[in-house]
Amino acid sequence: MAMRLMDVVRTLQTEDECYQFLINSRWPSGVCCIHCGSVRVSKFNTLGKTGKVRRLFQCLENECKKQFSPLVGTIFSDTKLPLKTWLMAVALIVHAKKGISSMQVQRHLGLKSYRTAWHLTHRIRRAMVEDGELLSSVTEIDETYVGAKIIRKADRHKPRKEKAVVLGMIERGGRVRLIHVADATRATIQPVIEENVSPWVSRIYTDEHPTYPFSLKENFPNKHVSINHSRTYGKGEDTTNHIENVFSLFKRGLMGSFHRVSYKHLSRYCYEFSFRFNRREVETEIFADTIKSMANTKPMMYRKLISEFPPVQASL
Image (cartoon, rainbow, N blue to C red; front, top):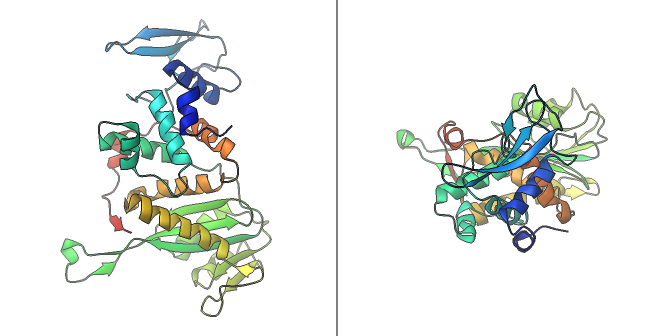
């Protein structure tokens, strides 16, 4: 069953049910101690200093005897929000084809501050990372540029375009990868391609960007086909239309839902669109896959989220 927002509200009505859903996602074979790995654990509840119920496990091994929460070590770590709020936020995000803004999530869930909603949505996106399995069939590769002309105060008399580069790779009939890269040079693009595309791929299609022949000749000899877009956008199998369609959806999502993004956070938007696109035909699994990934993703504190290099805003 596809878990949409109404299904979360109907089937996971209490915090205990939400916690049990998370526990089953994190430990499908049964709870084990996060310290020693023992399966001999007991479950108990206690009241915190604020009167809030704390759901804990106790390891029963004599050498360990440590307590731990089902949230420790996950993306939910140290959250003050009810777990049901998290699950409803996930349901909103995974089923929004073109994404949903933090402001809209705040309105839907009745959150008190935009900061809370923003931190919440970025933690969910951080968990929407693919498993790293290489693309192995016929693959299309292209790059797109995100952002518009930016005039910095210090460079007011020298306006220049500062655009973020997103490299896209799609396996025909299969998965897509959208990756925010520093630039479109060979030194940057070649390692990214080699990390994501199998050397046994049968064919790679690109446009005539000068980087690709040099980036592909070492590990993909005689497999590269360039398409001259000044003459045609495709002829038979020789096309990059599939990755262009993905870029179209990605950019319409950025423009229509988010309007303005920081380059330093762009990678997480790429994670989100890739994750959702790759599960477009299995809606029954996307919610469960996201929760499972969140339960196995390390915490991302707010101070770390905002302490990266100064943001460059892209007006889309």
